[in-house]
Image (cartoon, rainbow, N blue to C red):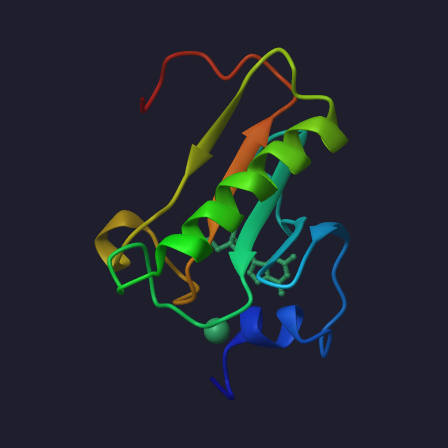
Length: 111
Ligand code: 5GP
Ligand code: ZN
């Protein structure tokens, strides 16, 4: 997708702080972190969101990347994975991404 910022990050056309990368997924730190650790797990192929017919192997690669991020960032105490889906949920970048949040006690607000 030519004008998609996460496609550009996945193609290394725009710099990011990469935490993990393989052939299907890139994980990089969020530009505007909402927690001490806030990393985005993003498939390299463009899907709009989690209900955009994402193949199982891509979902598996994303789940694997979450584990790699948790290990790299020392999130043994716990962390949260969130994927906003659609504008009403606050999705602003229309390329599937999972927020991995941690590094502090996240409490019991919003799940
Ligand atoms: P959403 O609101 O779509 O669930 O999340 C989009 C996230 O992408 C936001 O947390 C925002 O800070 C992050 N973001 C937007 N543009 C960039 C960028 O160019 N680089 C990085 N690293 N994060 C970005
Ligand atoms: Zn994209």
